[in-house]
Amino acid sequence: MARNRVRFTSLLALSAALALVTGCGSDSDSGSSTKDGKHPHDGKPVVVATTTWEGAFAKAAGAEDVTVIVPQSVHHAPDYDPKPSDLAAVAKADFVLYAPFEPYAEKIKEAAGSDAELVEVNLDNDADNATAEVARLGKLFGTEDAAAKWKTTFDTEYATLSKDLKAAWPGGKSPAVVTQVFTAWSAKMAGVNVVGTYGPEAVTPAQLAQLSRKKPALVLDNAHMSTGTVLPDSGAKQVKIVNYPGEDLDLLPVYRKAAAELKGALAS
Image (cartoon, rainbow, N blue to C red):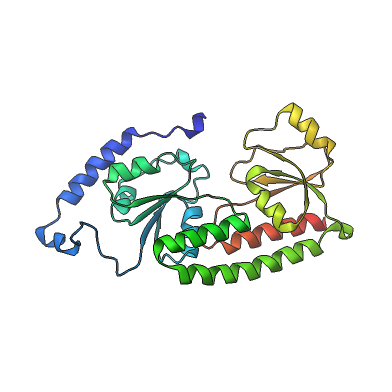
């Protein structure tokens, strides 16, 4: 729990700084606002996402103006300390996307004095969840057509990746797999036999014994929350699965990379 504590004292100073910046605008600047005080965006939503994961969901849903707050190099988002530029971005946003495990999102919005709509996103790359969340965001943004087009592309590629992984099963049989709870989506894509899950906490001795008795061929590890070797001396090959998209905010490479990692592990 200690890792989830976020320093909010700096937000007060940052919000004060932002107030000075926004307060220095000339009278002519106010002419760019609509009557309700919001800035016009030509029908295109301005989105601020806490991480590339939410940002990728927003882009898939059809958002074109997406700003990500937490740098990709920060593996544990709740540890990030927001900067004045982050608050400035939130102040201009129509929507702020966040996840439940990022408790500072609403604090950022409050400090920035934004009228943006705060939207909680279910960050799970399970195919059903991903397509449902993209469709929901598309409806919220008014970009349903773009979201539907993305789903068509996603469904086609996902089906191809899944088929290739099933073809790589050793001896044509689904291998036994243990997976971290946040990487179960990749096991589902591969169609493997999940015999146990663990995490996000470290594996206890009792869990270790229980999972080892399942004799899994593979252990799927969350690259962003790794607890080290999960089942040492079990003979199981451990595979790291990456959940977060890159700076291009493209979800599809996440599935491609996971498929490549899994296919390599199955082949060995």
